[in-house]
View 1: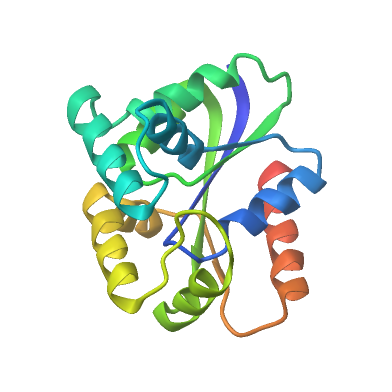
View 2 (view 1 turned 90 degrees about the vertical axis):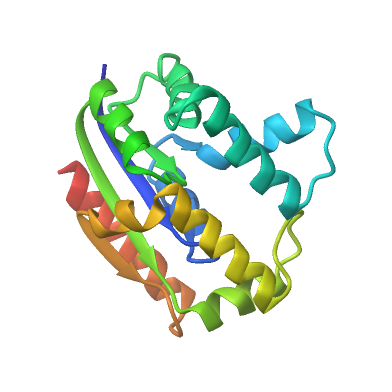
Length: 183
């Protein structure tokens, strides 16, 4: 059983990948929930685009249950020998429930950013499958909320605002939050 999990949640473009960078910089292994979906999209031979990711995210949960992504990530936990592990991209209370069964302590870190800022970030970065229009982000947000992300955000232990401030300040605050959890 893992001693401690830090579950990271937040709407698309809120800064989850920055948390991953900071955690890894602190020597904390990070598992990304979205990698399960991206892997399944590739396995199925689907085009790597938002529509495929959303379809697979809904399809595997419908076919195998709300905890399937967490269970697939959880299998990787058995190979990790660290005291603390960070799980990036938790989307539902069912996933949180699963992780509470496999770790002694679970902390939820929620990232919050305005719609406008998230849209700017997503449309400017050059990552496969990113959203480019306001309508695409609105649809994606609706999907994430239907899966249950709003419930996870509402139950977070700690919130970080990631809007119009220097990225180094955000990194510093992430570091402080993680250290607060692991002490």
